[in-house]
Image (cartoon, rainbow, N blue to C red; front, side):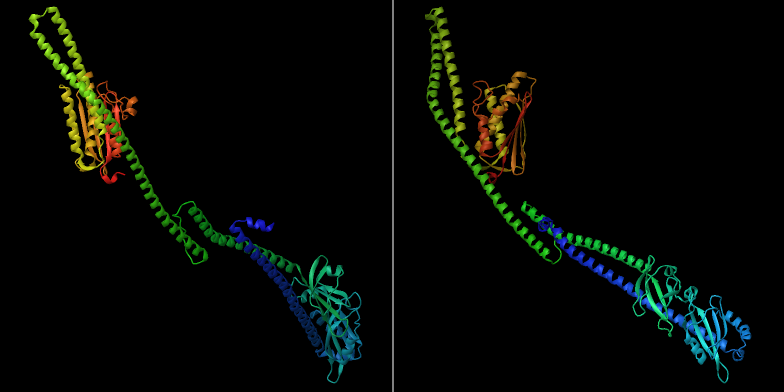
Length: 636
């Protein structure tokens, strides 16, 4: 299940997830270990601090002992005290030592003789009636030795920290001075070195004094003297407790328990764990951000490589990857760029070969079309020539007989004129009428024969298609010659016909590779049609109309353009699509064969691979523009 989920992750997730899992696991474990170590270190530091505090408290007790011993020596050292002790003068001792007891703030001031009997006892009301139960004190006093210790008192009275020194005369020990300070709550407050710590004094497992009120109200177990500081619970608070032993004469003795509150330690530990948690979280966030950035940087280059591969697969061979560095991804990107360059070079070569093949194919298609056109022209030429020759033979006979008939009718008319005197007038009129009708019939036969001859000439001209051999020719001269020949022919057939001619030849054209005879034939056909349109418009409008024929040439670089424009009747839109079809004509019978523009179309488009553009407006003008290549190399 996990494996399938992992495999569905993107590459960035597949890289980032294991790294973050391992690193964050190690980071969290390390942080927890770090926190545990410092938590224990804080507890150890607190224990060490308690040990140091314990030493300080013991030192304070030692100072109090020595201070008591010093006070005892000051009392015993007065000049009048030995004599008063020797005399047993209690009243005088009381008067003398009472101020000292008050001045030295002593809870107990007691004078004993060398037998251990109490000579004088001064103390507070709570202490005065108390009898010292410690026989050791009396023993040291009788011997005149210096001594101090914690001694027990009567029940419900505080124990005393006492000091003893000998009262001596010049010859012997007279007794001893015992001074004591009650171990009370106030005394413990003075002895403790810090305000946040507490001291509890025990004697025979009973609490004598305490700076902590809860220690007296609830029961709790003090740690053994020989143990390390331990955690104890007093009331609802926890403390680190250390038991100290005071005194040196009683096996049970007085014990002092040092209590250090755990609350500051717990607060410090909580703060430590909060800091560690924040540090852990911050480290995890930083690690995640760095991991995301690093994996993003790594995978972005892989994504770039993937994108470039897809673009290359889609045909964009110009795709390249920016490379910098020396790692494996960079090496892969460099190899990709090299592969893309090689593919681009091969694609360029293939494209060039395809282009050459396409060009060859176009040349083959054009050659095929030209061959078909030539075959069509040749077939049509052969057919037309055969038909023309077959028609011409009887036509020649008809034309000849028509000419003979005309001559005979003319001779007959002349002979009738000569025989008028011998003939009846009515008969002469009838004969003249018959001869005239015969002459008119012969004339019609002659005219129709000439028309048929024209049709045959056109068919033969259409059949005599050029050989396709191109020559360098002056297109301007050909156009000018065709224009003047057509105009001259029109004037021969119509003596009253006149047209203004305008020409604008581009001399920069130079020589053009064409078939001159065919181009001349095409130009002659278009100009003839233009002149016919102008003639018909002139007849319709009259003298107000000024005929105009304009021709021009233009150099188009590798092509040449011929423009033939007339201001005749124009071409109706419904016949424009048919004007280049063979045998289609808009002229009345006897005026056209419908082969002129068809032949022009074959010459310009089929033979010379050009184009014919027509612009016209009915009743205003018609303009033909012929465009074809100038050089023979431009023909396929």
